[in-house]
View 1: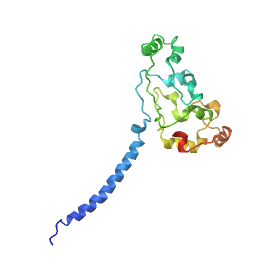
View 2: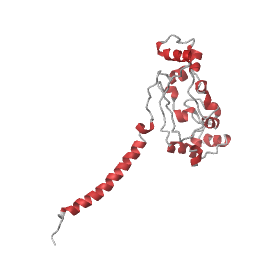
View 3: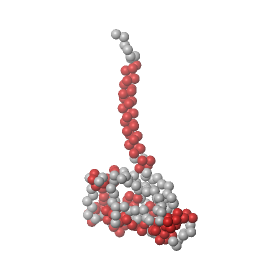
View 4: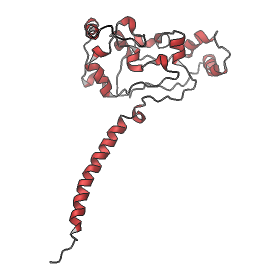
Length: 214
């Protein structure tokens, strides 16, 4: 019987099968890389805000504590975006005619909230409680980075699940004394301090799914 397919077809089939496997593997690898890129996580990206609020000016230069504006961090699950009234506590007297703050004054006058873009915005299926982390000695810097050096705020970490789990599995690397929660650039005084603080703060770090996915 005459051969239907040319002998080279066998070589072509082998190349296609092996090439297809490499193509699929490469595609999966590319997707994994993309999922960890700043494009997907938002890490290191400055969002356009309605008003260019400078964190380094208000914290490092003026010495305003994180909780003056984000008072909910100590008491509730959400740190909260400060209301315009908080801004106006100072700006009624300071830079109260600045064109850059016209939208702040208008918001205060009308009661219309300013549409700030959330920088650290977790998915709806993730439960995160600010208060429990603060009370257990996790500093603002651990998640938000050196905001005292950010003219415009940006997401300092990936906020991916593996990043959260790494901290939950090794809490001694992140905890600090409660007196240093809002201190930027804090460093432990000795290698064993973290372990002592875990015991002192009675940290029972959980890594079960239901801890964050409720």
